[in-house]
Length: 214
Image (cartoon, rainbow, N blue to C red; front, side, top):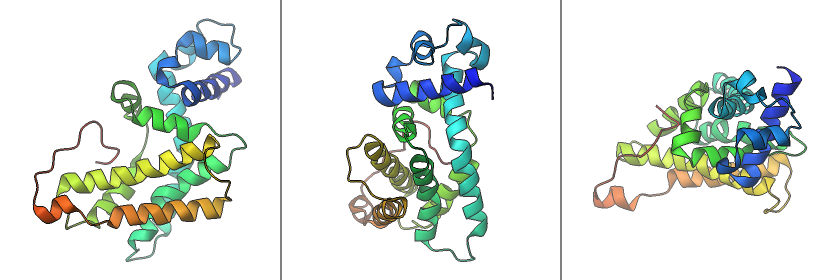
């Protein structure tokens, strides 16, 4: 990737993390990247939406590679907790391996914006993430399908939200092993929590927006 394109990706991630997607204008990201060429975003990414997709693709590449490796290494009959580790730990690593990360906060912003962020996510390769979530949904046979989808999506969202708060300095400092273990513990508990709706037979709505699982 060309240095100019890399600087624009880094600047866009930082802007969204600190100010939200609404702050991500072509002009703002070019100022943040110290890019004098007013056509740089259009040239490298085809516009604002393409830039958002490029940030997601760039940051998710390492997590998807790591998640694929972990999936392939799972033993036969892997436990639910092992699958939760596949879901969570690559994201933890991708945040903590950087001296100053904005990635989790950027991800939270995109997941919260159906019109822009989730549309950009459609263009990104998430096959390993989708496969992991699908296997986790299979571990919830007692829940109706909409609740299985909601529960697994909520688990991933919780991990991203905790990491976003950690990036921002809002949580106690832990090392990678401690933080990863704590998030996995909490996500495992969330996934297996009893469902009052399922127990009472209450009607459950269909999920809204793009599922990060298929």
